[in-house]
Length: 542
Ligand code: G16
Image (tube, rainbow, N blue to C red; front, top):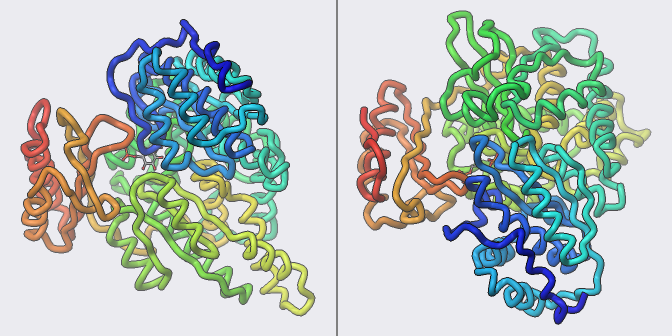
């Protein structure tokens, strides 16, 4: 198609019917589902242009992940499975907001500025979660893709990480894995079974867990995946699709509220897992003998993985540079443990997978996790090759080779394309199984500082701007100074505020040594935000 023949992209069905401003945020566009149709159509157009620029397949995922069921969203996935490049997020925001009368002009402008060869092929790989609004939005996206003559490869209902996997497999001609869902299940389950096979005594480990699937796509996918895991682990699934999506369940609910989800039986000492609405986040939890709730979040998962990898590297006598990437939400207890006990370098990145992923790429083995349970591990190609050589090196001892071979299989179990709740669950289960640990043993690695999160509704969340990986507030002027003053009153106190990129709220985080002080600390900070940034509704109170 020539750029001069663009008039037919004007589609009366997908004209702009919403006047509000929409923004490509932390994880794409995310808002009320009923205002998104034109945005999806336009993202279909944009995905084709991106595919032509990159000369590779692009992913388009329809989901609003942890948000309530009436929200929806869309994110574009770049060829190597990464989130859309930042410069194109701005292009996407502009395209989503222009008036219909400027649509052709804007598309032509993108073609010219990006020097796009319109006769090049374009492929867009699409997928969606289980939200009621997703099929209609998918149709809009497909209409956009086809208007610019792109090829659509639709995989229907998939988790976000599965779509990232499919994009990477397609673009690597299958060298990362077979570009099908069967390929995904087979690759992960085969590696999982291999690492578990020889262990006879599993100590305190029990191969059975409870899974809270947030009533989302994770339930649909887990039913299929379970067929590939038969004989390895018993997974008792709850919140498996009947109730409302993410309502009083799912990883975000459990992490933020620090309480168990509905429907999962209250049985002490049972290892429980919560995933979120598109199965890219995971957290563990359990109830102790007094029915007290214990959370093992993304920080705990990251430290478990880091400590295990350190051991495997020592056993195999391989030496690589390990690094761990967290965000400001990481508990101070975990950061101290990683730097002082594990002695692994820690980097703090801004919230949002794209920031963590790019920092993790700087290490030989980069482990990244947000405290909310979104994360994975990245291995440099050269590292994988060295491990492969070690496995077949006749000069290495049995112990060294066994450790290297475990590492190699673990690499296959990990979805390196993005944080993946199901792959992460297999990895945690592998480590606990290998160490013979129950969930209490795992929790004993270090102590968390008491911590809490609150959401404050304000008239315009963008009045709050931050710097230093979201840890310091720049505007409203003076707010940071006031927060610092409050925090200074509490031993080991830390608190920060930032506008959410996925919800219309400001997030407030606080931690301090004494749990009885925590509520006072966070409410005081939340109340400063309320007063200085135009709080809406009731003021946060003790
Ligand atoms: C998304 C992002 C995560 C981020 C979370 C919350 O998760 O992928 O990286 O931590 O939103 O972001 P914010 O604090 O900006 O609202 P998900 O699981 O909702 O896609």
